[in-house]
Length: 289
Figure (cartoon, helix red, strand yellow):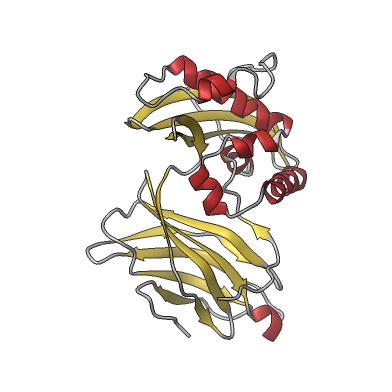
């Protein structure tokens, strides 16, 4: 399938710190205070030695503290090349970005949202299995909405005896070899089913076809229902596609765990000034026109 040129409206995946920083307002945590890391070592430092610790060798909390100290400082200082090379191969393949594209995206998001990272604290470390560590972070900073304190989860995964960062805990990625299109309004392409530590996720590039026909955007302010052969889960949604734009690398996460995805139904979708509607994507292999 030949892909069209895409306009850019990125949904951020590459850096969990940027995801949390884009949240509005001050979200206080009563369970932890962020640590002062102003005197931390530069990103890189001894990280290469720590990052190559073999999977069969015990990874201590001190090792994880050092790794996340480098990770936080790299985000804080805008060292996106280090963040990129320290991210898991699965995550980089999922994003499908070159290093240059990744760096440009991070810089644009930092600039647009006027983000400053200040402090962080590792709240909890949990072993998912021998090759995946779940780490809960408390992050403090400032953005366009003022000071923020956010709690986020990031994963530390073993790839070829090197420990890497993965913002969503990817276990398996299944690309679809077809696209889904409604000629008047939308086209979903480059679709992927992503099995994560949390459950099932869906990723796609969404083209706003209504921009050419009606010069309008559309929004999803309701929810999406994930359905497999044996179960279904509903997750909240809130995003808008402006006229002429595409939501690229948009990912929807659900805790649905059983089997492969058969369909996703989007509820409360507004096309232009029309009434709310819904539409479904059939993921069993049939294009939807």
